[in-house]
Length: 248
Image 1 (cartoon, rainbow, N blue to C red):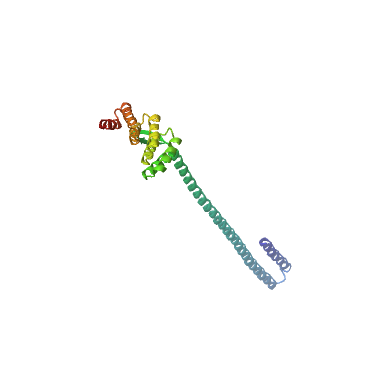
Image 2 (cartoon, rainbow, N blue to C red):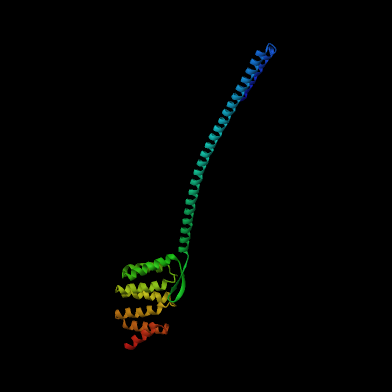
């Protein structure tokens, strides 16, 4: 568009020049008029070119500003998307961290624990630990009937547990505290039979003798006390058995 305008101006100047040349030697006045006209045309051409150039510069500047605005808008849009993605990444990372921590906690809970039972270190898993603790809590609360059921279930479920001998012994105690001596004797006999190497075995025999005495089975009580002294001569229960036999 600008080039076309410049060309038109040049053609006009050329045309005027040709017409002026036709009578260049008519007279001085005509020559001055032509020179004056030529100067005016040149001035007008210069002004027109200047205006056209200025308009072109403004148009170009406006185009650049428009492009800049569009670019800034696109950058703002992309920046917003980046911020959203960063937030999502942070949330996901936190969830994964929490998930891993929870999984690690659960796995650790399933791992066997080292505990001390009757002076010896043993390994127990969380399930048997929880079952044993729950049964003993019932016993401490003097809920002997509930404790007896829980202890019986524990021995049935975990017969090889390091807590098994103690659970069987406490089962007999729970029966005894309910004044069920017959059930208590059976439970304590299971301790002696199934866990003869347990520190609870000697105490179980002493409890059996006590229950037999309460049931008026004196001879059976004496026999149990003598067997206790023979089987576990160095135990505290054996010393108590000797005292009872000496008192009879």
